[in-house]
View 1 (spheres, rainbow, N blue to C red):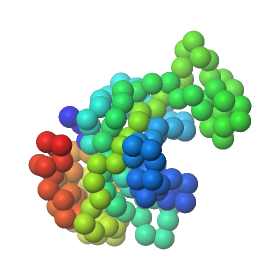
View 2: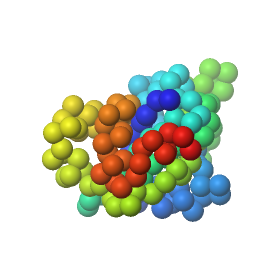
View 3: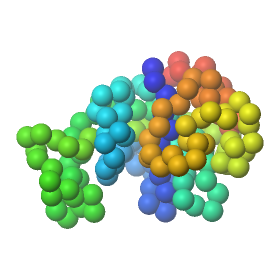
View 4: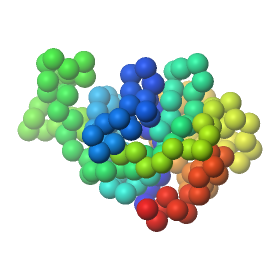
Length: 162
């Protein structure tokens, strides 16, 4: 099982929005970065876990955990001229952009703000905390995942079993 961090601006799509979706599941579409596309296309598998991270907002941070609910598949928004994510260079025969479905796994008992993440020596080398990191999805090391789950009041071992 791999571990991830999924960034979203809460005014575009929030953790609460995900919880209101049918089956608490939604396609993670609109990604237009090749490295992130490769994560979804080549590396993610159903059952992988990830943090849902609110970014570009007054208080960035982690409200809870999601589970990858599908294998990577072509992102249909790339082919839809009505979509804000339309890519005129996309070709249905050779998909350029991919997505995975994510589903709500659990709320944290308390929101873990970015300021607190930055204050933890145990997280000093976490990718999301490095300067210049702008990727919307990043891998997370198991020790970082466990530590942040504990900060949020959730037992990471129970998540891995569920």
